[in-house]
Structures are given as C-alpha cells and as structure tokens.
Length: 149
Image 1 (cartoon, rainbow, N blue to C red):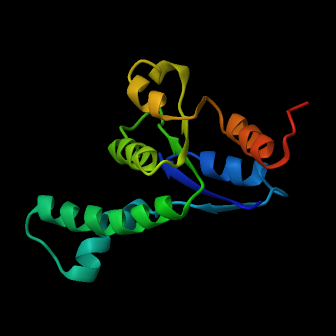
Image 2: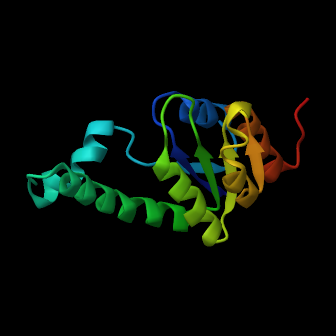
Image 3: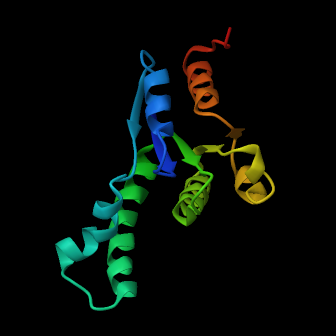
C-alpha cells in the first residue's frame, strides 16, 4: 500500500526533511507546498502581472497557491499540518480544515504550548503529534503495523 502524504504548514524549520528522512524505506510519496517564501508570495504577480496594491499582490499569489494546495490535498491519503512556534500559519489552519472537510486522514503537528489555541483544529484530526518522529512512527504503523521499539 502506497501512502500519499501532503506536508502542510510552517516553512521555517526542517520538520519536513525529518519526516521524509525518517520514512525512508516506507512506501510513502510526499508532496508539499512551495516552501520558497518569495516564490510563493510573488507567483501571482510574476505570472499574471504586477499590482499597485499589496492586497491584490497577495490575493493573486494566495489564489494561485490555493489551486496547487487544493489539488495536492485532494490527491493525498494523509495530510500532516505543522503549526510552528514563531509564526502564525493561517494557511495551515485552512489546509487542516479543507483536509478534514474532504475526509482526509489528518495529523496535526505542534508543541504542547499550542494545545489550547489549536483545540478545534486538533478535534478535527485523527492524531496530534508533538514531534516529526511521532509522525514517522504513525506512518510506519499505518503501513506495516509495527510499533516503535
């Protein structure tokens, strides 16, 4: 069984790489949003033309990224959404809600410090992890039935 896993959320740490490296040898295909912050922010105006107002600049980029994100989430079996420590990831909250609305298996990843703030997001998830290693252990269990030693 191959799992298609979409890794959404915070882009300022190496959590994605930790999960991908930890899942080496498992039958998993990973996808993720564009994590180059400038490319993600500017994709709309680079493709569709410049905007004088920052709102429309951001609007074009957000909508273009939403096309990519919605397709990736729809094609996924499991969606992992990471909420980081330093930055507010409003897009991650959207991705979690969208995945839940589509009936996707949702894993939310955040520190214990965010439990209260993310209680509604956590309630939509099938699992809530605090570390990338826990996500890897979940994927290993789902695919092989093996528990960590």
